[in-house]
Every structure is written in C-alpha cells, then in structure tokens.
Amino acid sequence: MEDNNYVVVIGAANIDIGGTPYKPLIPGDSNPGVIKMSYGGVGRNIAHNLALLGINAELVTATGNDPLGMEMLKNCEKIGMDTSLSVMVPDASSSVYLFINDEKGEMDLALSHVDIVNHITPEYIKSISDVINSASIVIADCNLSQETILKIKETCKVPLYVDTVSVSHADKIKGHLDGIDTLKPNLLEAEFLSDMIIENEYDCLEAARALIDQGVRRVFVSMGPHGILAADKDKAIMCDRYPAHVKSTTGAGDSAMAAIVWSSLNEEGDGLTAPAMAANAAASATISVDPTIHPAMSVELINKIKEQSIIIREVELFK
Image (tube, rainbow, N blue to C red; front, side, top):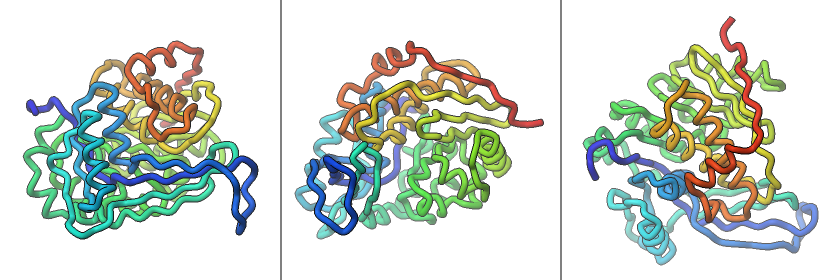
C-alpha cells in the first residue's frame, strides 16, 4: 500500500452467532426465534465497513487455523480488506461471539470467546510499527490486552482512534486516555471512564469534558436513540439520530466508528459535525437491517440518509 493511503485496524474478528425471539424472552426456558451465523468482531466489522466506504483497510487480527477461521479470512479478503499481517495461531479455535436479542432486536445478553486476540502481543505490534506509522489512521479495539493497547499508544505516531467495545473491556484504558486522538464510547462506557453517572444531556457533557481533560482530543459518545454527543476541547454538539425502524442494534457502533474515520479523512469542517452526522447515518442504516453489516453500506447510502431532516445543536461544554 502507498504511504498514508490506508487505515490500520487492530482488533477482534469473530464468528457471530445471534438469535432474536419471536416473543418476549422467558429466562431459563427455550425461546422460539431465528438464529443466524455471520462474521463479526469489532475490529473486523470496522474494517468491513471501511472497505465498503472505499477506504483501504489493513486488518490486524488473530484467528485459528480451523475451517471457520480460514473461511473468515478468505471472506475478509474477498470484501477488500488486507489481512496479510493477521496472526494465524496453529491448533487454536477462532473467536466466537454469541448474542441474544430481545423481540425488538435490542441485545439482551452476549457471550464472547475472543481470547485468541491475545496473540496480538506488544512484541508483534513493535514488529509492524513501520506499517502502523505509515497509515493515515490507526484504530484499536479494546478486545486487545491492556499491554498491547498501551504498546499501540506508545508506538503509534499517527492519529489513534479507540473503540471501547464494552464496559469490561474499557477498563483496559481507564486512566490511560492521554494520547488517544478519538474515542467512541457509549453512555455506559463514558460513565465508567469518567467516573460519572449520566442521567441527562448535561451529565453527558460533563462526562465528555472529563474524558477530554484526561487527554483525548475528540470524543463521540453514542447515546442510542438520542443520537451522538461530539466534543473536543473547544466545542460540543448534539446530533440527533436519524429515524429508523430497529431490527438489530448489533454492529451499529462499529459502522459509526467507520463512518467517523471515513468522514475525518474526506471532509472538512469543525471536525465534529460532519463525522457525527456520518456516524448517525451509518448507525441508523445498520440498525434497520438484521445483519451486523448493512449489505448496501456505501458513501451514497450515508449521504442519502444525511439528507433527511436532522437536528444539530451546539451546546456549551466549557463555561
């Protein structure tokens, strides 16, 4: 790849197995519904969306040499991702992510077996430092070990974007936010990282300010049906979510991160409004379909959704 003409995504790639019941879940019982298998993982999903948005994506992940892992890598290459730097671990099982939605498509429970991603070690990150620092942007997901994430921070000389993944995984970067260019938590993760309780818009603004004070340049807080709060040290905006009929929320955050990256690479402005609008558009598209990745994700789709009525409000972050 030409220098700076690609994005490096370092993180998990999973086989996703998910189910949605026909009726409200009954705990401890067998619930009739639909079960589907697809390829996922936060890092892989972000790279997949980037490829669909026309961005050259170098996916650095770890898989077993089992049939599921081999087929997943072939699928990644077919989509347009470069997986040449991914680690294949002999005699190991590839990652599996198991989730159950409620009858409305909202995730109710999930179990992840992503231990194989620990084979992306700090030593391996050091060995590919030239590739990392020749990229336009590097994205790390918090499925990685804390040692590896800190090594990426230490190694990376280009803008580093971090996806927190979940509250339990966000613990790996708590107290280590300095040097992160762009952070994309949801409300629970923002609460955890800021040690604050978020009950309203003002609380979310205060949490964003706390994260910026810890050294993050930009924060995009996903507020679910309420849209996205985007902030840097000088400004904050609230971008309401585009209307969408929810079929499944799984993968929405991954498409939002990819859209933030795409917009940051291709659009001018205040560095907040355009990426937040793109993220909302991508997420709205993703939740409107069952697959984790919208099959028609594209620049054209994002721009079409952005043409819909949307409310963007500049809010006072620093008094």
